[in-house]
Length: 128
Image (tube, rainbow, N blue to C red; front, side, top):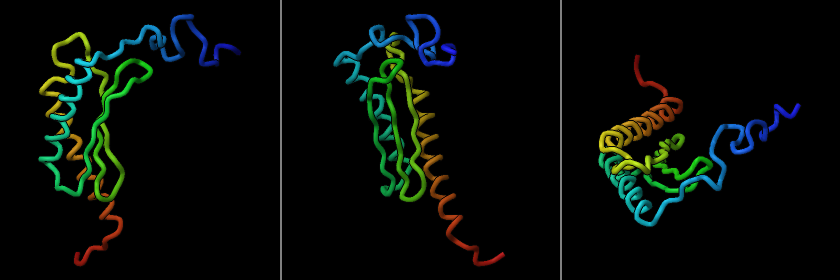
């Protein structure tokens, strides 16, 4: 039965095959600053697409597999929308320009769709 435990497998890996904590890369101060700048660019673009009623934020954290970044949008009504990243610390750009633009558009569109879905449930059509 120990094959069903989260500790099954090789001693140096977890059940998901991720690196053990002692092998996880940590962000240096410069890397964290660069990643935050990338996230700020995404949040700025999302804010350009959406009205002021939408709350947009970003966060850098240390996850199970290493550094993680997340951008989230809270629409005025409806569920929050988020996008997460595991930055490529080996490349010059942790989040490429194309990815930043794609994520900003996707988050803005998804947040607007959340509002539309929330409103459609509460508003009855006035004509057919």
